[in-house]
Length: 79
Image 1 (tube, rainbow, N blue to C red):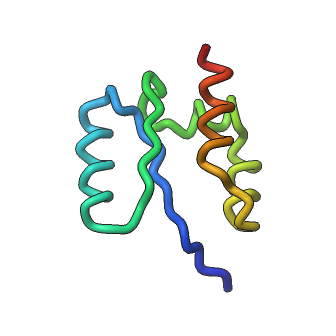
Image 2 (cartoon, rainbow, N blue to C red):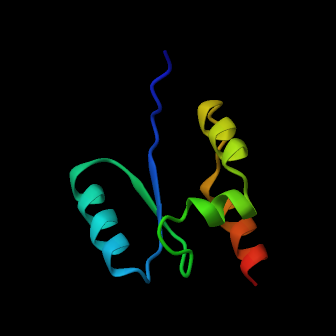
């Protein structure tokens, strides 16, 4: 079984409860926060529409996930 070394939380930084939850998780774990304004709660719908959850999970499990590429693709679709 593979144990992921990196963890991310994708959240809407304009959604008050998402911010509280993301901050809570960040303070108690080693996680990278990725803010996705206006994505709502949960952010997974936007992530799936723009990037694809299957692609995200595949990249994560094969250790090919790059936050910068992910953010660039999201920004490109949001612009």
